[in-house]
Length: 67
Figure 1 (cartoon, rainbow, N blue to C red):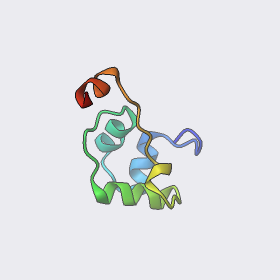
Figure 2: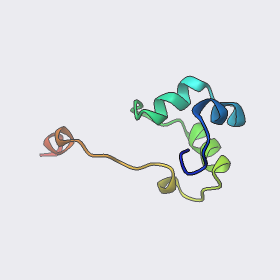
Figure 3: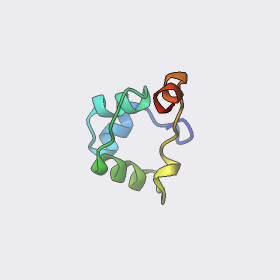
Figure 4: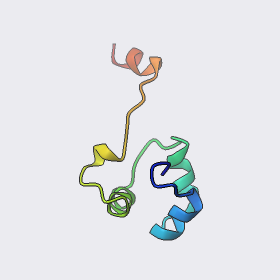
């Protein structure tokens, strides 16, 4: 969003996604991703891979859960 200089509200209006959905994604407050939402965002940003859309930020507790 920052690279495209688009606000959360403008992205919601352009994609038809709910502003709350965009806000939660922006603040990294989601635990699951809806397939349709991912497709809409990839299409809007002209991305060919989900890896261009999402980045995993590991927390210390994530490593403890796998030990």
